[in-house]
Image (cartoon, rainbow, N blue to C red; front, side, top):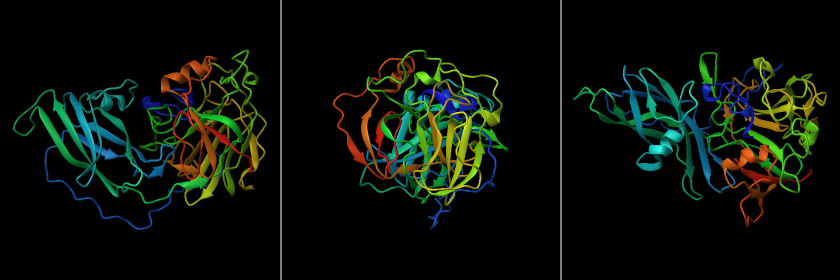
Length: 415
């Protein structure tokens, strides 16, 4: 959740999101790295654009996997990595995403800079210095009933601080760059990891959350393990998350809540024995392998691995090799690792490594959407003990086969 992350560098760069803009998972034991489920039928490669000078280089970090969310629409969440190939400043004026001739997303001005960071930077910006690289976080949204694209291309408008016409005019448009085939993999369908009412998704897709911006430079490449990660906290009857001394995990009524296996499959990674952190403040000096705190990694099959993080000290009830069944209690919610308040960090990833993996979307089988926070700005007051600012007159509704979005409030029934 906001500042409850697991990220290490965030855009600065790593993450395992569960404290301020940082919170990264930790290393695990067991099981070797596996790749994401392969596409069943390859779509045709998008055609290459005509040869032309492109001052900005662009590549997609990973092919997007479409997922239907609680807003009734299909989301394709992915990142566009851009590099200024010039020896002077270049500014991104616009980024347009297309499926053939169909325009799916257009960003410019503040909407573009809001979703853009330089590597190592934390401030929104669309200007890149000489040889500087960065990322644009994209969320292509397809309305219900509209066709889901099979290929995507990008048109980038740029302004050069030192033009050299005719080859490099002051304003240029790069057409059809960073072509990518949309994955035809299906999000894994799982059961919720918690039970009870009013669980808040405080930090997940698809806004510019700490999880979404957490990319890890490991092994010579960037990994976005937390692209769809959720930080769960539970609202009390008065819509607060703690009462009394903020620094004590026991002040949070949901501390110690049972955590359930989201599907069938073996345990392939466990870390335990780490102490609870002081709530209300971000820990410092943690080694990378402890960012996820006490945690469990479970193989769900077909290249999907579940990551349950920040588990309560001495609460892990499973070991590597155990075969889990859906709904089984595997641990309790805690405040270990890189966290500043008790919560469950949960995500699905393409390998057993919580950092060196690609974050994959997932959908829950059956649950109830009972409310939504009013805005991202409402999260910080919640961490300060104030009641959640919820959207008024929200009509609760059942959900099935959808992915939660950041700010959703949900109720999960027992098995």
